[in-house]
Image (cartoon, rainbow over all chains, first blue to last red; front, side, top):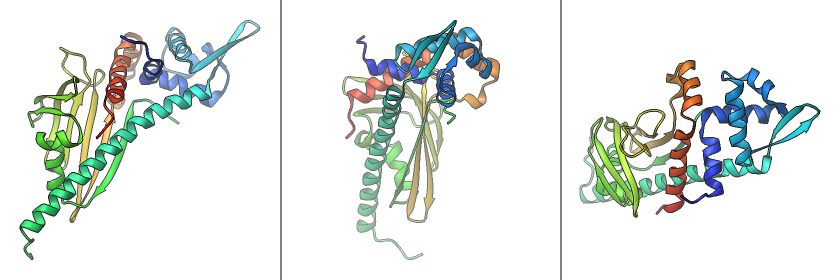
Length: 119
Length: 149
């Protein structure tokens, strides 16, 4: 299967636990993996795994400060991810628009061929 | 923000009675005009069907049929598996008649986290990490493959 950078983005944001990690990173700014682990109901090991996936997708970056590693969100990449979600929403809008046209046309046909009875 | 599941909600107001809208979203020859090219659908809870998009496509399983107000199905589950919360996307249509008009809402969601215990969520996070991501990959591919009518 082709490796599409967008697929990686999708995978990264698809997992609810990772979305939680991402939410916290947005809220807290720079933070270490262990401080993050204190804020979520899953293990430190799981947090590290999520951070790795997010980092691979380019959604978070890390820097060393002394003995600590601090993680932070890449705003540009996150914006791309939310645009990908918005694209799916737009697609449903187009489908709903098509349903509206079809239903209204069917209704117009029905009312013109069989005029509505008054009560 | 508290985004804890994949969930998209959209709605539209339609100038047609709810029964007409119901037929538009549930009858296969209508569905082909706004959704898939090839539609095979057994319109009852648990009913199996197929939605084809060009040479892509896959099975769907109907979840709720409550005419003319609720219709839902699951899709994007892995081949050979029965769809359930956690391995598929749920598409729900909610119709509310308002006289000659209908408010139609669609919700596409991934995981029913509310129904899960903390232990379940933990297990999911630990074990099924790659699984869910694959469906979103497939969904993204599907969406990319098929720009809507």
